[in-house]
Length: 338
Image (cartoon, rainbow, N blue to C red):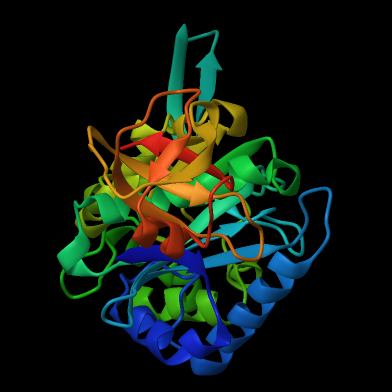
């Protein structure tokens, strides 16, 4: 059985392998032992904190194959983007110029460095084994974070964002980076992303141009990257789009990938998840597939389960499901249909 749970320090060796295998552009998952160790310890401290508002906490989850004793993926929730340092993005808006004498008015798209998205909750660090792509377990890895937010809403902001990895080719080259960022750093795209993950997004962002960049002045290949999703990031995009997330006028600073946005209360897995109490059973007449989680904080667990569920009725779970979720008869659980 595959179970989503909070990361533990004993996960470090396997987590570094996941980081090694992750897509370039997932800057929140750097392939560096000490950095990952700090991230794990920070996450454990975040789960243990008694907080009543969204602060700098980071909640790091792993997807564990309990039968094989191995990790198959990871994902994170940062309670507040920009809490400790500005969260930089590029705002893609039209600038309008006009001439009364010539009777001409013309709009030109331009990219401007900003930190408008400070204060929102940020989903990040999504990575799953290739064998599990386009399976219910990818949904578990992404959407169970939303069930966690639903159970502990006081810890999160009123809006949630996520940056989807933008386009780069098979050699790891980003046309958007080559046309823009590379002129200010003289670094390959992959190295810039690595430094961003290890050091700080801010120190790179602060060296970017402070004036608007007019999109028509960029090469066509770079223009085509604006809002474009990397093929390996498409599933992460699709899952959250079905949750009600929408693209907006913001793109990633380095590769031009899209930013998704949703009001927290309107996200499907938050607005439409059901709560119920467990009734352990030895026979399940499964009629639908669900994501099921407990409502614990430090011992949060979530699984994919085939159930016979009716709203307002106890949630029938097998002994194996109860063990995976660490619940017993009468325990509260939260669920949403796949």
